[in-house]
Each structure stands twice: as structure tokens, then as C-alpha cells.
Image (cartoon, rainbow over all chains, first blue to last red; front, side):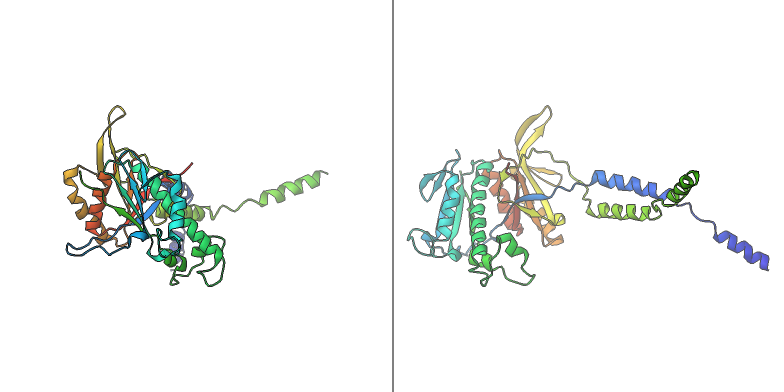
Length: 192
Length: 152
């Protein structure tokens, strides 16, 4: 009886050899290392306007609140009916949005300011992104200024807009974004 | 003198790095890479030289992203053909654009936080992009991203 028990214990000591496990794990690791692509997608984020019903009119916008940017097929830029250079866009957008009703040709207040970009069907995509990029950079500059001044953040000042946004809680409102909503409208080009 | 030497050698050999937990460490690394890996499932058949921009944002959740490629067809012998739209594995001509809304609608049902990343070649014309965007609006996939590289 005692001998039988001894034998059983012997069998329990038989083990799967574990020495090769590290090698197998290494092989798998190398496979996944090679296959993995950690290139994060970067780009300019936008939200398209929702589809309107047939009988629904687009919301009315006063003309002075809209900054019109027109791009033709040759890549020339018309800013509020004046020929302009892409480098001038950023400054003009900042002036337009942060006008607070001063200049009668610019926006009444930041909340209703709209930047409209209209292209031709033959405009190169590169030109469109150039202009769109400048408009976004203008908004980034405005948000940075707002975060530094502390005017919209309850007196607290921040290094820049990213600093402000990163410390925001999950359910807190982004006050700066609400005060200066980036309303960029991409108008449909005329057919033909 | 001799004794001193021997003592050093024996005590030095005892202090080996413990390797028993190495498989565990390797397994942890392995699991990390397994989780982060997104296998490349499509072969892009159009050239997409992305534009450069400054106002970039990162998309951290790659699992929500669906790519749409717009650019000139890659032809054999390094030649470029007409501009086409590619979604997943399908190349589309202009007449087939209305199918985009069905594809995108289905994707949106599966993943409500869907972001459509438009990877558009710099030489593409706005007309084709606007047509695709109209289809995205029809499908109600409104979050888009104009994929761009950091300006040098």
C-alpha cells in the first residue's frame, strides 16, 4: 500500500519542460514587434454639417458674421471679395472672430462668427488644406490667448489652451471652446 | 593572497541575475504588442501623398477609424492613372459613389464613434472630395479627419 502511494508521488514529479517557453515567447514577441505599426494618424479634425431635410432652410446668418474665403481652380484666394495671400488668412480670422462688434464689417461676437470656405470643383486639395490649416491655427491662437488671460476660465490662467483642456474633468464644460466655437463652414462648390 | 582570490570568485558566482521571471517579462511584452497590433488588412491601390499642415490633432483610438483613400491610381511601371476613391478593398468610380453611403452607414451601426479619416492625395481635386463628403453626410458619419503630415 505504502509502495503504491510512493509511485503516485513519483508520477506527479514529471513536468513539462519549461526551458523552451522563453524561446517560444521570444519568437511570438518578435513576430508582433515586426507586424506592429505604431504610426498614429494625425490630421485636421472636422465635423460635417448634418444633412438637412428638403423643406428645411439652412439657419439664417447675418452677412457681417461670415468671413468668406473663396478658392478658385488656379488656387487664387479671395478673402471677403479681395484678392489675398494665404499668409494673411490667420490674422484676418483672428480679427474677424475677436471683433466683439467694433468694426461694422466684422463679426458681432465670437459665438456667431462663421468662417466659410468655398472652393471650385477643380481646386487642388493641397490649396484647400493650406487655407483650412490657417483658419484652424487662427482659432488655436485665439484659444491660447483666452487660456492665458483667464477671462473665460474663472480667473485661473493657464500656460496655453492644451494645458487648460488637459486639466478639464470629464463632465466639465470647455468654457473657451464655448466662448469661441470654431464654426468653419465648407460650402459646396457650384456644379459645372 | 591565494585564499583571498578564491573567496572572491566563489561569492561572485553566486550572485547571478535571477532569470526565473524572464518568461513572465517576455510574456508581458508579448501581450502588450498583441493588444496594440492592428494588422494591416488592405492594400492601398491609389497614391496618397498627404498634405502638410500645422494645426494637427492626433487620433488616439485607432479602432474607431475607417480610412477612405482618394488619389491617382497606381499603374505598373510607376505610372499614375485617373483619380479614384478606395474604401477597404474596393476601388470606386464616380457612378458607384452612392454605395459609399451604404458602406459607411453599416460601419456607423457597428461603431457609433466612427471617425472617417480621409487620406487624400495633394493633387486630387475638390470636386471628388466634396462628392465623397456628401455621401458621408447622407450616411450621417459626420466626424471626419483630413489626414496630414506635420509641416517641416
